[in-house]
Amino acid sequence: MTDRLARTRSTGVLAVLRAPSPEAALETAEALIRGGITGIEVTYSTPDAPAVIHELVARHGTAAHVGAGTVTSPAEATAAAEAGAEFLVSPGTLPDLTRAMQDTGAVVMTGTLTPTEVMTALGLGVDVVKIFPASLGGPSYLGALRGPFPHATLMPTGGVTPDNLAAWFAAGAVAVGAGGDLANGAAIAAGDWADIEQRAARFAAALAAVRA
Image (cartoon, rainbow, N blue to C red; front, side, top):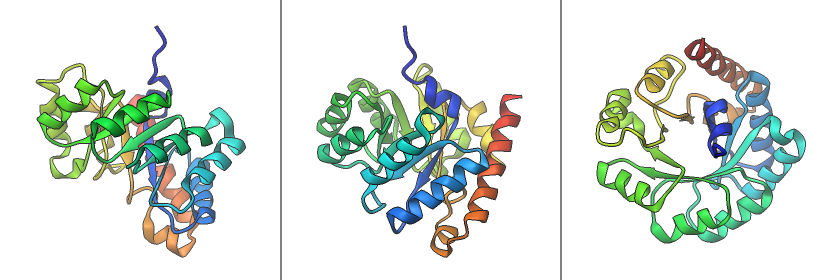
């Protein structure tokens, strides 16, 4: 049986990319990739997100694991998938939206926080249960969820840093989503691509250490 999550597992870290323009999003993604982080979640907070996804896929092919984030409507799910998104991420779990995401054939990740929400996502058959904002409970909360949901594929997003990356994976994360500590908003606004690249290098080094 093919592992639908093989790409996500091997990538390990998905950079949650929120940029003020398509051009800034592309520059940020290139800096992330240069730094060693090839998982790029282009959120719909970014103008013309599907065009950014399409361009990144055209540039990097399978060398980057590119998807869409902050998917809140079926139309967004369809547009992102048509642009080449390998995965779709929603901040919450709504049945109709989840089914529309699944209809695209892309890997589906939907947001939850409570055990009830985790059960809802699992009942809908999502590929990955996103725990968001994971910073509220930390790795210990993720570990606690493993008790009733030992086989769930959990991805914490929010509060993930190079310093606590090992703790998240030790708690059972299949992958992690990293926003401000990786695709940093201030650095993006300033066009400081060197800073973004350095942040990515720190995350990549931490991930390599976890896997060593």
